[in-house]
Length: 383
Image (cartoon, rainbow, N blue to C red):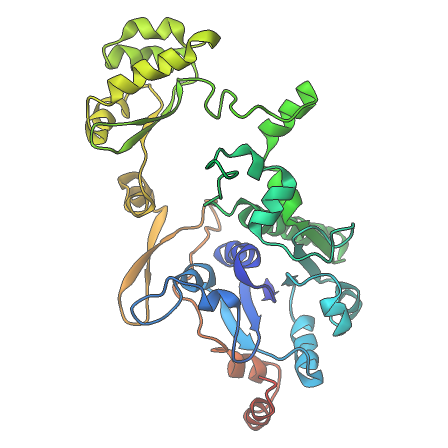
């Protein structure tokens, strides 16, 4: 499968990274001289390369085309006729004005799958509004669920709208390709970031369905129960306790030397007191000591690792869930491996991210463009 990636930043980059890991040939179609904005996103490696680009761009190729110039648009159409998927993340109408909208390209290549990622959808009253992850989370009600400082909700570290949109778009593309295999016809895939993050809020939606009201500030999964939360240890590190079921909480209480606490697990009026008693217990030992005692047992307890620790965790490394990406200078950096494990056609993480326009000449020569014409196109700013 050949995928043409017109997207910028995280949602589309994550979508096409997933497709590349699963075996697709992904070609980033980028603006000459600038490229995907993720290329200028910090932090940077010692050699000056954007680390987000290394993570999201691995296993892809890159061509630069100025789609606003007629020659650039024509070259893109030639690429489309030999491709299976186009993914774009412009506001509705931008590509249509260039003659490269979904109706234009589906007419040119009826078997094409044309996927669009927008903040609020291609239709509706918000279609032309700009928006990033935090805005989509705000409209979807996700932002209101996080406790934050006195001046408002917590600012999310996880870009849930971006990542959910990338995942849902990849899933929609796979479904459209499967349907094409039966009908021979391509189609459009439309994913809004607000819709994508809303799909993650199943428990919050259930609260509205069940009560007619937004979920409370703390429910049984977000702080209402002492058996499900985080606790500070003597060294200032934290434990994540997820002992929701009585069997887990009973085992935990036995191991920490407070078996009598188990019967108070679901006492609604006594949760603050129970939480305080558990906090006092966990404050007596370090995170490492508690992890050694509790994590191997049936307690649903885990250490709260920082992300650098998580990428070197024994379980992740042993299972190959984290791989080392080799950079051009020979150094290595850790990246998350493809998540879905296929027994017959295993996914493979790409080994490197392309430089801006690195594959332009090779791809155009494949289209039948001579190297002298490539030079002329570059001189006119088309490439």
